[in-house]
Image 1 (cartoon, helix red, strand yellow):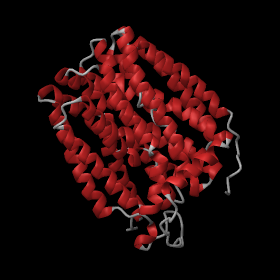
Image 2: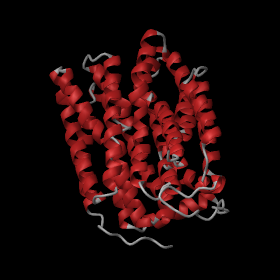
Image 3: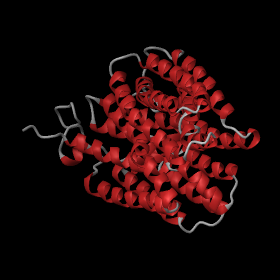
Image 4: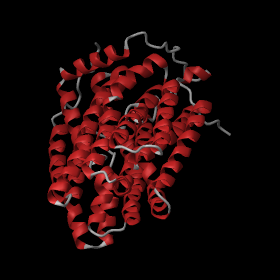
Length: 416
């Protein structure tokens, strides 16, 4: 029997690590109402804390990529998971809004940064030569797969017991994941005497970088700002974040509740999206190895915009069938944009710089996500409805589809 290459074990460990981090990050949507009722905090204030988390985990991406080069992938994964565990533990003793901002905005935002931004790129670049796009697609799908498994469970725990029971569950998962990383994770194939998947010979032993991580990240940003492709990718990804984790991830459940949809049903719909996200994003990774990544992104953004514009109509109809149709259609597209975006970044800036460059592009994604998370709460408070927030997001997606078409088909790879 042919032995399974250890690259696939690394993929599995990373997949579950991203799932756990994704569960922690995406669970914010089910905590808005419970926090509002128990602590008496306003929805804009709660949304502000979650917006900071979205902003920080994305904006930390390029710096984390530089720190990975200096301290190693395994150490950074252990440190990040430990930070998530500490943040979840402190949630049980928080009493004030500033504590919510510190815990869910800063600690959990920074702790999830590695897992939900540059980790998929780092692992695919180091452990895979063949099937690299597929590996990115599988790992990217893990970001939303956490919703598939646990959001309805978290909502059920909140309904039957309290929000503390839901936090306890994801805390236990974080602790278990910490030990799984400690036992099974490795930074490079050479660490265990193997070549990357798809390569016959061992690659030279990688040395940890001696560069200042902050200086390296800023240098990468400066290089990116001088490239037209960087602006187009960052602009389209800003809209990607605005229309996914910022709006849907944070406010979808509350939007459904405002139309009389039970919280457990709304959470189940969001988790249903996770099923189809796993399919859609994995398929997107496979497609990104074979087709023009620009046209893939064009269709992804166009179809996402259409689905967001149709969501208010589905909720107004009062039919769960149309809401399920939206969940399927939107779910297939949720994070399908990531593999071709990483592919275009790798084509333009080269494999060595791709993780750090993607980190900055992901930072733009999270600025958009943070903006949508906060303004969604503001729009709801001002108008008593989220409808305009979703309609505007759909319009922005059409703009993103035009951005990606302007990228050159075969850009020159940077050699600086």
